[in-house]
Amino acid sequence: MSTRAPAPQSVSASAAAATSLPSMPLWRQFYVLTKPRVVQLIVFCALIGMVLAVPGWPGGQTLAQIAIACAGIWLVAGAAAAFNCLIEKRIDARMKRTAWRPTARGELSDRKALGFSALLCTIGSAILYIWVNPLTMWLTFATFVGYAVIYTVILKPLTPQNIVIGGASGAMPPVLGWAAMTNDVGPQALIMFLIIFLWTPPHFWALALYRVEDYRKSGLPMLPVTHGNEFTRLQILLYTFILLAACLLPFIYGMSGWFYLAAALILNAGFIGYAYKLWREYSDALARKTFRFSLIHLSLLFAALLIDHYLF
Image (cartoon, rainbow, N blue to C red; front, side):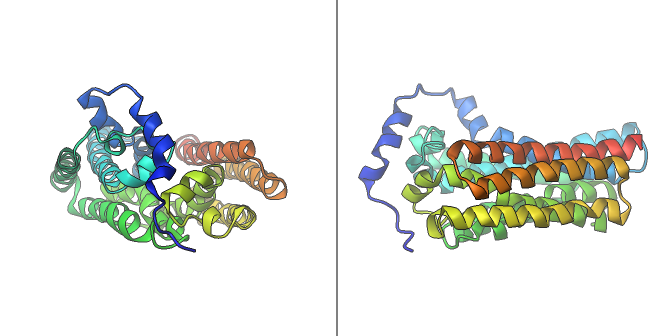
């Protein structure tokens, strides 16, 4: 199937709607580029990796190191998000959910967006190298390159498996957090990486199902566009079963106890239930609910790891 960009008239409605929105102050334009909600989840997952790497309750010096590491990771993640907005500004302009971004609307120049991304990446990398450790800096920078360049520039417009392969970048935060505390990458960090890696496709494909027309107009070869609704729904269901197996690994390996196991079984049963209903009978409303539950699933799953670590 061709992924050629659609004719300009196909984007006129989204562009017109975005243009009609009031202009944002400059500080808010830069803030929006960092994709705050996405970055918050990234930092949260990195924080879980940090605290799990530290036996017992962290002391004052450890808390300071955690705060510094979170700040550095936040800055580099925000830089990657800003670079993504710059590279995808024409695609964003064709999609209703992203046409309001300042780069898509032409409010923020390419030079300013690129300079902002470079500044955040430089400051964040320096913080991690000087006050955390070089390993964390290089892993974080590699994640930046993986997301902003390999995924955004190469994989996303090339293959419907973009979100599967590119999901490796999104799964890195717990590894970064673990490395920040231990200057090493242990098997526990790799288990958390695997969980997020397998969580990403059903999470993102649920969104792509009810935004399929946006992706069709954008010219991106997302799975619902290239393989259809029914095939995508089946893939979501299959991935939730594989995800269940991965979510059992923390208990099997011994990095968590019964509290986490119970939470993992309940949360994964809920995700599988949504995926099964979506596979049996599709609706945009159910796809939205599945997408929203996937966010709850990951947040509560890692919160359960944290609670289990300290209280059980």
